[in-house]
Image: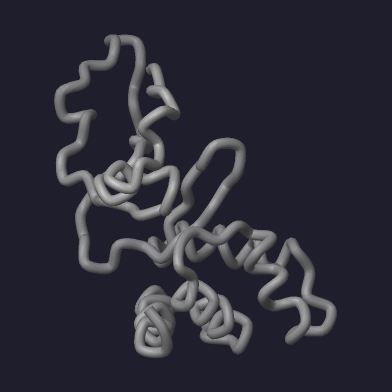
Length: 152
């Protein structure tokens, strides 16, 4: 990503009606320069020296807002919550395949919920579906082959 991509993130914030503050520009730059996922703590640490008095709550509120607007996406990876730039090129509902080694994300174009039938007494209002494993590149490098398989 880099500077052009940071500007795309800022433009996305602007399209959603957010006031573009210097802190939000910094968040955009952090995500644009990230090679993978960022935790809220990593975002905080990337900003705290520049913004005197910045609180973790301020960072978390901004991340939550950006997630709600679809600017960034939130992922549960193992025991932690991580964020990455949203899939700008996809303006439709989709899910992800996530490599546990290199953190590459592959959009899954089909939704498993299309073939799911909930019991009559349950009304589904939203869902999230992610598949974790090892991408082809990591498998070719021998990473993840002996890690076993995840069971459902």
